[in-house]
Image (cartoon, rainbow, N blue to C red):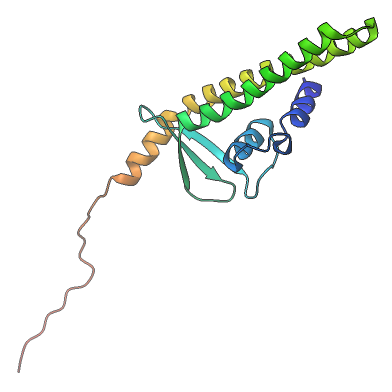
Length: 163
């Protein structure tokens, strides 16, 4: 398993995807346990029913960034489509390969790309499941913050009289 994660760390490195936003790089880093951005993400939670993603940066006290879940999904879909494109290119190259060694090498490359794609989907949905599990906690914490209680308490009593 560690070998697969290492492969993903190389294949999903933001430098390989010039169109990857810094936020998506931070999310990929969070999922893979890497620090691709400064500051890195410390926690991700998804709000219930509002399709918003709450992001807390490492060292921050509260959630300091809110993103649309749809935007994040679109970024992931773009990355998966890029992997699909690379797989298609490799398949075409494999079909044109003349020697058995070239075909074997092309098939190995295709297999690695397919594994990376499968792992990327799996990790994202696994992380999404963990985020969904924490949803209730986030909502409860937010409700506590929104509830204000007013307490009146006597601290001092001043009495005076005029002479």
